[in-house]
Amino acid sequence: MRLVKIAAPAVMLGLLAGCVTPTPEGETEALSPEVLDLAAPGQDTTNVRLESDGCYWYRYQGPVETTYLPLMTRDDRMICVVAQ
Image (tube, rainbow, N blue to C red; front, top):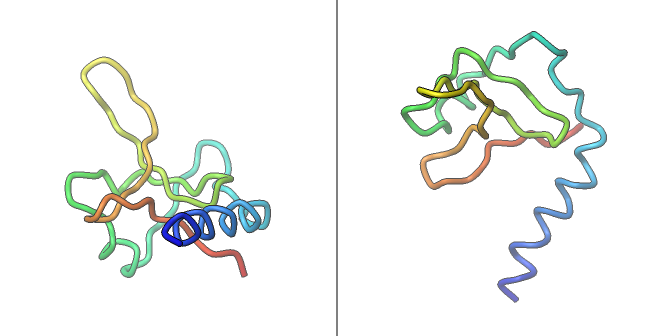
């Protein structure tokens, strides 16, 4: 039963991801107050993109490289949108 609870949201996200419009290349998203409230501290919410997987990714500048990482909640869940 636990597997169903875990797999069902992943399957639904996969079905809905094709309906999400990702952020155009070189642009960023302005996050709503609700999304900002969900985001865990320590993530740069000033440079965020909505990717084709339906989830928000933020730009992380590390000591060696710059990359995009998934925007996470305080309980380590990716922050994703549901397509209308």
